[in-house]
Each structure stands twice: as structure tokens, then as C-alpha cells.
Length: 410
Image (tube, rainbow, N blue to C red; front, side, top):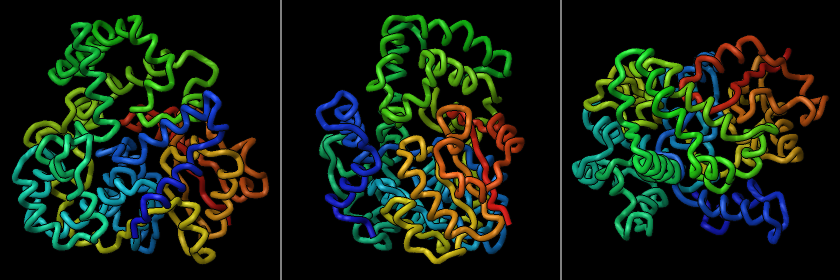
């Protein structure tokens, strides 16, 4: 189910708020909370192929994952797990995940599925929604997509798939503003996509992008945590990202890695950042769930996924002991207080089977668990430091400080 709006707001409040309402930090938290009541991500920004290697899925695996934009949840189906439970506090993200699942099972071909979620920019998608998807969608998700939003100037929300869905949501609008600011300085970010080699990508960064970080407006924006809300960085995560240094230098290093750390032939995150879409005609890199060769497998397995509108801690509290074995936390722990972090890991540890795996990302490089998680809990888990570091290096989204893998001992 999708909870009523009042319940959703209450869950978001508990997840985000740490300070008094009238304090500076409290006001920032409440603004961030308000932004997250709607659609934030139309594409998730964690590399699913890194996830799949770390998760090492088996035929009996039950994955519990934070849903976000749904790209990774559907991509995990290519690993053939027994079950996936996707949870999210955002009703909009729940509706997006359910839309993708129904579409995968009901649209007639990969071409139509790709037109809907790959190109995401065709009036025919709205017609396909009306005829093939809506009759099979749950009532609450259908109400969301057929509802009208001020962000869409009164249009129905489903219309974003006729107007490049990747330009919508909080992150999509933030990337659009970033492009506009760069154009004001005479920089067209689309030009990077014409680079033919890593050397040309490096040259674009050094000569065109790096100088932008010395511009007054960019210096101001990177020093202002409010301006980074569009990246999905809440107040607590901003502090972790900074780690006592100038955030501008951290963001420069992350952008450098996104720009020239991986070939454009392999990094669809760079296409989304610099082109605001995937490569035309599916001619470039794509997340696993959108690739032609995976379509039949994803379609055949969508009934293994359930999508729930709740926090991961709340969901696990209702699960039996030793009943789950794969956990995907994204970067949610960066938002958490010590009490919330310990409550989550108590439920993970209780519900985990021997050999269970937990993966997550952090804004800063180190794992955040040592010194914050109760030693009695942490001692049950083995940190795979070498593999975590190797996978961090290979994470093509390039926006996180660290990727972390823990395995339950015994």
C-alpha cells in the first residue's frame, strides 16, 4: 500500500529532522523534507553492476532494497534472485517503481518499453500508459500518475514521459539549472559527449569545467548547503561530504571522476549528467534493466518484486528472524542519527541469514559504522575492505566517497 499523505509526511519528518524548528539547521531540514515529498529521482545514481557483483545473488536470495527511482531494483532481476522487497518513504518513488514493473510485464516489446523509460520523450508513451498500463496499475499509483502537479503546470504527472522524464524530479531540475548556469559562463555541457577518447574527456574537464569552480557564483553555491538540495544532499549529508574541508574541492574531484574516470562508451551516468538523457536510439550505455538482451528476463521476473511505502527499519521489524539475506541501503545512513542507525542494524542483524550481505554508499570515503554502531552489533559483521575499495573505484556514478560491503559472520 501507499500510505495517506499525512503518514508519509510523518515518516519523512522522522527521517530528516534532527534540530529545533526555529534553529538554522532545523529550518534547512524542514525545507529539504518538503522537497522530498514529491518525485526526486527519475534515475537512481548508484551503479547497479557494482551492486550486483557485491551482492553475489543466489537463486534463493531475498533482497531488501531502498527503491529510489527503481532502476537498480529492476536491474537486480537480471541476477535472478528469488524475491526483492523494495521500500521507500516517498510515495512518488513507490508509484514510479510500480509503473516500471507493470510496464515491463504489459508493454508488448523491448522497443516500446525502451521508448517509455529510455527515451521517455514521446506522446505515444502516454497513449501506451492509458491503454496497456493504467488498467493493471494499483489504484494509489494510478491516482498519482493521473493527478496534476504544479511542477507540471497543471498537466498530469504521467505527461513527463512525453517531455523527457529525465528533466523532471528534483534532481532533473537541478541538472537543468546547472546546465543553464554553465551556459551563462559560455560552457555547453553537451559538448563533452562528442569526446572520442578518455584523453579528450580529460581535456574537456581541465580546460572547460575545472575553471568554473573559481567563478564567484559557483563558489557561493558550493558553500551554501541549500543550493545542493537538488543533488539530494540533506543537511546531515552535507557535513559528511565536507568532512572538514571546502565542499567545492570535494565536488570538483567528484565531477572530475564523472567526466573522465570512465569512457563515455560505458558510463550512462555521464550521459545523464551532460546530455540529460541516454544516448539517442539506445546507441550508448544503459542500465541493465533497459538493455534489449535483458528485457525477457526482467519481464518474466517482475512478479518477484513487491514495492512498499515505508522505511526499511519499519519493514524489517515485521519480518521473521533469519529470513532475509541481501540488503541495499543506498546512502540512507548518511541521514541517520546514531539511534536510527542502531535501530536499523538491530533489525538487519536479527533478520539476516548466515552469510547475508549489506551494501551501502557514503558521502565521505570511510564506512560510517565504526564508532557509531554498537560494538555488539558491529562485531557480528565482517567488513570486506579490499573488495569495498575495489568496487568504489569502479562505481561509474562517481558521486559518492565510498562503497561498502559487510557480510554476516557465521
